[in-house]
Length: 233
Image 1 (cartoon, rainbow, N blue to C red):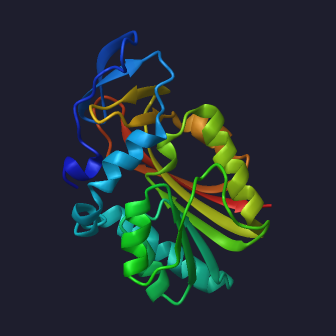
Image 2: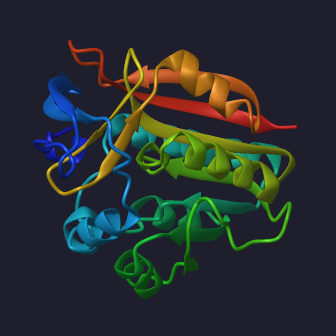
């Protein structure tokens, strides 16, 4: 996986915020004490990234996890799948091609338009306010999206996933994490929240039982990718 595919970017503090420089996931960053999560910065950044990201490979581990997710859905009999953070539709195309009834949601209008041009059913909206009725989906897939949410918003998004997934359904969630909790803002104004394994697992239990957990792409500074499968009770 390339550095660019790992969201590589130098970071700086928010305007006037107290901060200290460190290193996380192999890159320099600034941890800021300000409430710097600005969804508009995410939309602005990813609006200009859609075409480039559409051509990037998912990476070996993510491709494997996605294939396992498709197989699990088939084996259990899941049909309806929600992807939170559809991005450029890389995962969505695979899910839809597998015969699953796919629905995606993304905060960035340009990403929504790109996915719709691919024939994917994607709507514009927020992970914290999913525009779907209760128990609408058998399963949810979301990779590298929820790490942009601070604590309260992250919990809200998890509660929304629990609401729209049917009892007995499953969620698979992937985020960049770290050995310790921390947040930072990169040079584009994007907010990131990295959680330790213990913190993340405690959060994910808001959905249900964590039945599988794995990490990969480990860095010497403690950064790594985290993935979990959660069974909705």
